[in-house]
Amino acid sequence: MPSGTRFSIDSLAENLKQLGVGMGAHVHVAYSGGMDSHVLLHALSELRESMGFNLMAQHINHGVNPQSGSWATHCQSQCDQLAVDCQVHSITLRPGARGGLEAVARQARYACLEKILESGDIVVTAHHLDDQAETVLIMLLRGSGVPGLAAMPQRCSFGVGLLLRPLLGCSRRALWDYAQAHGLRWIEDSSNQNIDFTRNFIRHRIFPVIQERWPQVAQVLTRSASHCAEATQLLNELAGGDLALCRGGYSGLLRPTAPVLSIKAVTGLVRPRQKNLVRYWCRCAVGLAPHAVLLDETLQAVIGHGESGCAVVRWQGHAIRRYRDCLVIVPDFDLPGVEQQIRWDLRGPMVMKVLGLRLTKVDRSGMGIDPRHLPTEGVSLRWRQGGEICHLPGREGGRTLKKLYQERGIPPWERQQIPLIYIGEILAGVAGLWTCRDFAAAPDRRGVVIAVESC
Image (cartoon, rainbow, N blue to C red; front, side, top):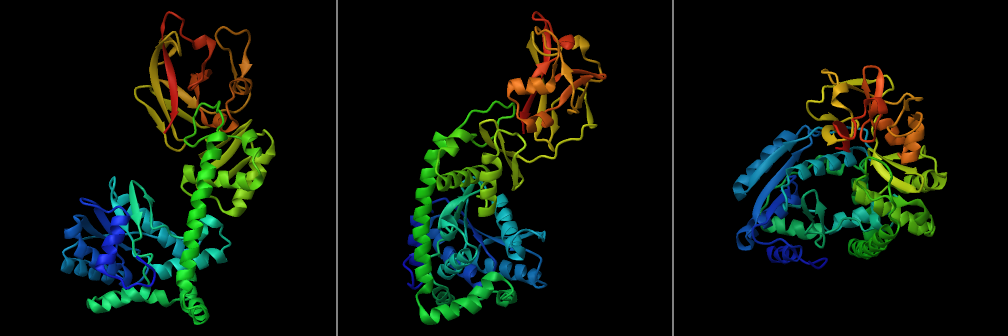
């Protein structure tokens, strides 16, 4: 849809085809009831039969504005007139997140939409040319890099489906012309005039001044976003190749879901390439790249910290850690206290969500705990206090768990996470790793192995 052209049903149909919307698609419109989303919904309702897709409106009630209830009623009424099924979702915003109310509302809105989708479903939003230009300017003022300046993509993965923005090439004025021509009625949200919000300030105070000198500023900034999007694609391809070259081995028990990086390989790259790789790596693992300050902290505190297992950067509910030559991203769990104990009767799996662990009892010949040592009430799960000693079968003398962990290459954070198996007040083994000699099954007898995995 060329910039500045009149919005029409035909031009929308062509853009939808280019974005991959075909017969049988399930299309969900993010429908606020404002002019932009109402124009999109109206035009899609005109196309659904000829293009063969299923159409539904999703209205998110943030509960912030006193009129939000009447807005939901209005949206339902408009959808009834268009014979479009409308679902209203009420959400509760949690203030205090980075970015203020705008960011909190946006994150909650997208999280709600993502939960609605089934595999292959499509969410379409009514972001247009002027929105894109405003986003570019906001990103510039935040000091964003190339990926941020690429602003909003027309098409991207979204949960188990897709997110499309088919109006990015169309101006707000063109949508207004369409709305007037079709006699559409929409909601006017008074908060859109509140210049305390960054986007509103830019829209009402900054852009009018710039447009007096550069009338085509929206098209120009959007073109720059397209250039940055192309550059981002090249950076991602470079990072993907570096990720393959910098993969490392991992000696821990709980395999991270994200690829493990080799510190030696990463430090062999020039600094900008290191940053590009770590950004890409984090985005693959968490879905979001760290901001510049956190990225520098990661490179300095974790990669440049030596082989200590104590170096850690916490971010987005995860922890970026290193151990020996490994750089990993793992969930940032609250580790149990040394005095904590959990009784497990071994009759079914033991799931510890706070630690992200699942323990199971597995029968194995010549391995694990001899069942004759297991009391009817089961075992006690405890965590390291320090100084524990285990005598392993076939080895002279006892070894401290610290020494065994070091020999096995278990990272320090896993040492605090993996439970110890106690029978009475005596250490019988370590889940997923060892059984102490006095409790071990003989080679010709069936034993009980306590297996552990991430969940």
